[in-house]
Image 1 (cartoon, rainbow, N blue to C red):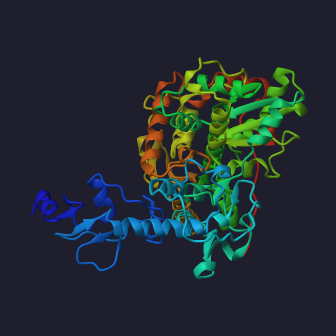
Image 2: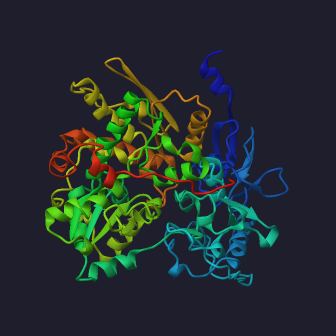
Image 3: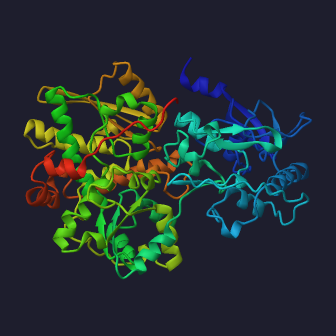
Length: 583
């Protein structure tokens, strides 16, 4: 039997709102409606998660069924007749919304999710102007324990999406459901504050939440105060994934916003000097590639894991403290940059480091946590004083009426602004690995690498692997994103069964392009499109290997002297420690 016959036999015919629809057998009513161009409202449903059927806002009528049925959790069958917008259905949905709103704070004007709140949007679509049920405010305290994430249980609608991601995708289990009935709450594990739980602060719960029950720590007011302080020189660095999401936020294609336009916009916001995290990404490759080669040559601890992602580092500290020696000692590009801006750059610019207020602009909300780690003070100051997420920068641009797409490009400030295509790759899962291989290959072989694209470590697959022959030196590498995939790799390492020499881990789906600090993202399809834009920018660069960066070469010649040298170890490397017992 050929494939075409199998496909034909597996298709069934249903009627939905009078529209004859041919659909594969086993398709949900929700996806059948979407295929027919019909919208069914959802709240607990998430395109990248398992079906939960908690909220019931997606109920529909089906002929022969006495009760309304959830569209997300019900598969169609041959000849099924479905109605998605009868008076009974609409009334049921309005009542569900009213019941949810009766237990939800009415502070939309003050809520960080106003304008991007799924509950707010549905209330508007269903014209819920009055509520037949009295408002019951739980008056639960807000959880500000985490430097990255704020929890407001008063706004939680018990959809379960945050729990699902934290448990199934990240395997962290920092959130769970406590109590029963009307007393049900989503709480950190063992009822602790969030920072005391196993939370790694990846921020993916923020993207999963349809409302404002989980949000990022806001520091825009602190930034504006610093920018207005005449005694502070405010310096910023921009991570590669930020540009793409800002373009989306202003309604443009991802490749329409140029880095030079973003530099112009940041100067208008009040930054005195605009530099680039990509410079430090190239620097990370210089240090990390040499560390890998020394481990391979000298019998060091293998496989070596990347240490760019602070959520992944904390995951290792919490769940695999016995394997911490596998982490690269390299700081992340953010922290390398922070240490250098108050030493090397301050010297070059003849600026006293105590006047520098260092702000990084990141797609990652865990970077807020990383910046306040006690290890990150090797410049004799806080290496990074503040982290603003992409969401915060978008709000500042909107607040000030600055549209970066309308601006002329300006150059980055000197000494720490140049970058190569390899640095850009840090924004995508597999990118750190690919950038490192470009440099490692040329260090080992002494030959120019002609084919720069390592396609085996690209894409949205959860685990990607490659084998590279470097004149007889065989290097096996892997790249994974989301911590469930990281756990599988780490279990192999703990069991002594890992075949790899070098492993890249990023906690967020797709890597930094899907970071917890990015504008709210609902699907991996959008993340994949951002990833492709990363590769486009890499191909557009004249210099595509980190060791070709001229400013990096000057840094070593004038300041660091050598990779993995004394000064590099003082400023650019660190070590990590056990963060939690009895998990």
